[in-house]
Length: 243
Ligand SMILES: Nc1ncnc2c1ncn2[C@@H]1O[C@H](COP(=O)(O)OP(=O)(O)O)[C@@H](O)[C@H]1O
Ligand SMILES: [Mg+2]
Image 1 (cartoon, helix red, strand yellow):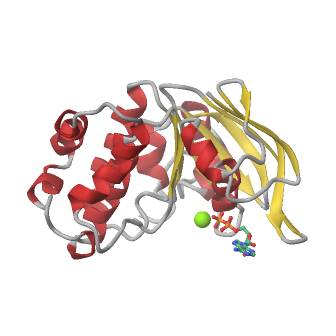
Image 2 (spheres, rainbow, N blue to C red):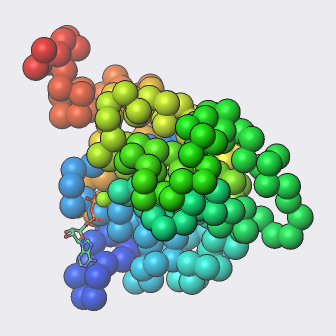
């Protein structure tokens, strides 16, 4: 379980996060929405230890990890998947996956650990010996997620997993995250593909100018007028504004 309380952080003297409170529970997906520049990526980077907060607290399973170095945060069981499907381009698919497995300590069987990934993304098995740079953007995103999956973190933070991907690839990737969460991982997703993402989310937080403006269950936020108008492009009676 991830808990963030009154978190403040920024770059140099420029404040970005202004008192963020949130919680992500095992088995649930917390979706973070918000316009560009709201501070969503800054929030994930701060939780993961890449930016030192100026105030507030980050807790992982009750343990205070505020201001802890990213490698220590990773060891504690939290993993950040950056936006832009980042993988090691000159390593093969297999070696990218092995790097994920390396976080699990000594005893593991590669085949057993990667089997669930190949079930969902069989293309990664087909391309096991290809260099990651020769994969399409969508395949690289699958690999980035797969690498995090095989590390089996307690908490997964995922920054815009659908960014730059063909529309058809977005539902399977979000469905993978849904199944993953169901195994007991706490998943936090930042996403612009609001409609698809709302369907797989449990909790939603809307961030604007470094603060959470609105939070609730996905069902509550789908019914919220402001969310319908601003984020879903629906009118008064739920009809599409731009058909
Ligand atoms: N490395 C950086 N150095 C300085 N300012 C940054 C840096 N990264 C982001 N910012 C600024 O922080 C604010 C929040 O950015 P970001 O967290 O990337 O927002 P989002 O992910 O919601 O689009 C923006 O004003 C952005 O310009
Ligand atoms: Mg961002």
